[in-house]
Amino acid sequence: MTAAHTEDHDDQPITGDLDLAERQALRRVVGLSTELHDVTEVEYRALRLERVVLIGVWTEGDVKQAENSMRELALLAETAGSQVLEGLMQRRGTPDPATYVGSGKAAELRDVVISTGADTVICDGELAPGQLRQLEEIVKVKVIDRTALILDIFAQHARSREGKAQVELAQLSYLLPRLRGWGGNLSRQVGGRAAGGVGIGGRGPGETKIELDRRRIRTRMAKLRRELAGMTTARDTKRAERRRRQVPSVAISGYTNAGKSSLLNRMTGAGVLVDDALFATLDPTVRRASTPSGRDFTLTDTVGFVRHLPHQLVEAFRSTLEEVADSDVILHVVDGSEVDPEAQIDAVREVLRDIGADDVTEIVVINKADAADPLALARLQRREPCTVVVSARSGAGIAELLAAVEERLPGQHEVHVLVPYDRGDVVARVHEHGEVFTQEHTPDGTALHARVPASLAAELDSYTTLPA
Image (cartoon, rainbow, N blue to C red; front, top):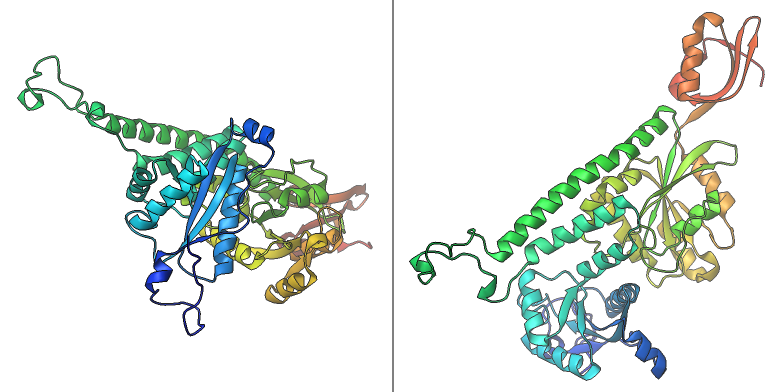
């Protein structure tokens, strides 16, 4: 394979038409192979791991961004349990509409598959059904795209009943337009002379096998949607109760494997599963935390995002992601040790826009500061106006983060008032909408020390104020 050049003859980055050599070249991505050298270990892992070749089409940006995308695809493949043998990129203006990489490059890809002994090709993009079928016919092994790979990882990591239902719904949404049959043996449309004289008793139900499968998938999807609608009732009830009691909500969001669960554990002692793997957390975890002044709020750990997160997943997980959209503050966790953290921030914000959470107050939390380059940290702090640098592992910066959260929580006021006994309704509203620290019955009325919303604090101003 010839290496692709990244610049034209005038040493300017290619932005328009690509010359013939650029379009025809496949570029190997160095350092993607995870093939093992120990023979016994290879023999053991070959029984359970798929051997894959990665292929990507580089259409925009510089070569560094393209290679970062391919390295992330390799991490996704390893998370799914695969063994990466080779990574290839092709420089094109746009992906080929027929085979994604073009017929000539597909034939070269077939040679790479044969030489490496791979049994699967993973494409760094979402393939149309026609592209998937034609590329599979050329390379003669299974072909999957980035979307199918992410869906497979989610399926492996789903633990709760709701999580499994959400993943299955996303998988079926992806599968429905990609169903295909092989040969006439799947047809059930027979009958009469048109069917070769089969006649009475030989007529089928009027559906091909593929139509029957589609109908079954649609029926299953409708059932899953009904189940998920029922499962959201409990979460909606708890959320409504928190709103009624005026408990502020903070959501932890960010790129996958940025350290969100570690941060939750450090801030609350929740003991949530922490794993150095992509998409280790799928089910939201809600825990109670407190600010330095003692104000309570809920902290929610949510599913991580990734570049080009499949829209099927966003739709299926919409009920879970509502925890983020309905929160008062978002802690946007970023891995400060990553090669390109700015691209990850942009990818997360794209999903936040999709779910209507882009107008929620955001604090960018730069995590893994102990492993990050100080220059990269300084660059991120210049780029983002509201940042806090922390290390969930060591606990550095957690106090500053809690102080920043307290500053941005919805305003509440601490009051010391004496409420007359004939205004028991006011005392009841303080208990309902606020947080009561002390309550004492005196000869003149009920003495309250509480934290209440601004609207209720304004009403309490008409009563006698007690010394703090």
